[in-house]
Amino acid sequence: MRKKIVAGNWKMNMDLEEGIKFAGSLNEYFKNKTDVKVEIILCTPFIHLAVMKEMLNQKKLAFGAQNCASEDSGAFTGEVSARMIKSTGARFVIIGHSERRTYYHEDDLLLNKKTIQAINSGLEVIFCCGEVIKERDQEIHFAVVKKQLEDGLFNLAPEDFEKIVIAYEPVWAIGTGLTATPEQAQEMHKYIRTLVKGKYGNETAENVSILYGGSCKPSNASEIFSKPDVDGGLIGGASLKKEDFCAIVEAV
Ligand code: PEP
Image 1 (tube, rainbow, N blue to C red):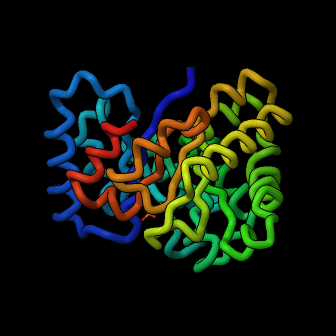
Image 2 (tube, rainbow, N blue to C red):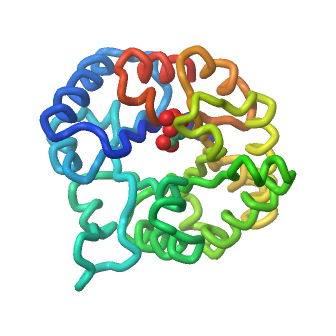
């Protein structure tokens, strides 16, 4: 049975004090909940990671980073390696978010190197893929996602692929208030699962969690998450509001 997951992507929000306060309030909220059968992950800026280990009940709330370096160590000023992230107690890292692809020109080759670094360091990877609006209008969105997965992930050994969670995030829906319809999400998630099946076989395809991301909010979460190939969400803006984030977790 594949896991249901809700991952919050805080992006570049919350200073140290705000992050501690916010994560503390989530920790408190989920502390006594026994009916939540969802893996909840907080993907925070790097500055919060070491503190999260101390403050979160990790049986309820896992945490991770939003990026990692493509190299292991050395003269790469300003970078943070996957091994450093792992040393904080983090379990996860997001790789290939569209904001990294767009603003920092991260291409599939680089994202593949980052993924390999992350896995070799013992992290699990939330690997993002998704088309821009022009590509959907041109009806090449399936081809775009296929290439992102083939070039970013499909050289992984089968045992390494087990450390991957895929997040389908149509770029036109991220932070825009536009959301893929549940049918559009299901269609793409099913396609992604078929690609994984073609490469790694049926068991792996059935086990991989595929999250939807793009303007998820409490009002649309239940409908999207009710689709059979949607195994949860990667949540940006709504992960910064306790009530919204908790409501989305409960929708899953
Ligand atoms: C994201 O940043 O991954 C995301 C899905 O953002 P939002 O929920 O704000 O669209």
